[in-house]
Structure formats: C-alpha cells, structure tokens
Image (cartoon, rainbow, N blue to C red; front, side):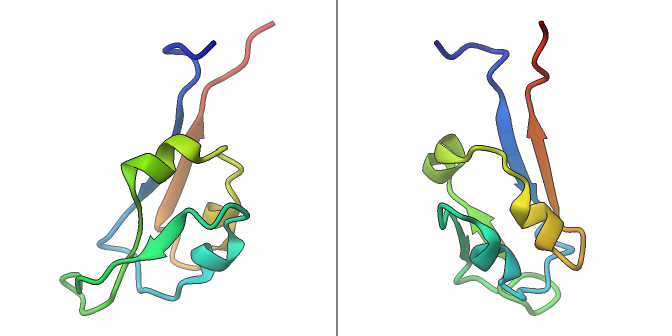
Length: 80
C-alpha cells in the first residue's frame, strides 16, 4: 500500500545539466530521456516525465553517473 511515506523523487537541475546523456544509459528502467528543448546554457538537458517518475525505484544510479551533479534522488526513510 502506497502512502505519504512511500516517496520517491528524482530532481534534475536543468541549469546544471550539460546534456551528456550518461544518466539515460545508467537508468536500468530507461526512464530518463533527453529534452527536445535547449536550456539557457545551450544544452539539451535530461528530463523525467511525471509518469516515469512514478515508475522510478529511486535506485540513484542516474545521480551517481552524473558528472555535473545535476541529479538529486530522494526516497522515503524506512523505519522499523
């Protein structure tokens, strides 16, 4: 059963992303894609749709792979 304690979230900082696409390769579920819109720095940043965000397991491989530290991964703390 999912509730407020079952929070999984990936935040991609579009400003820091330089479009290297390493996160797309690192994601085992292939949930991260590259945007078709150029950011203010002139790069095509990575993005994750709301639908894909719900399918994300918060494994954090994308964040570990990012050389620009543009990805933050959060997950609920398990008590017990």
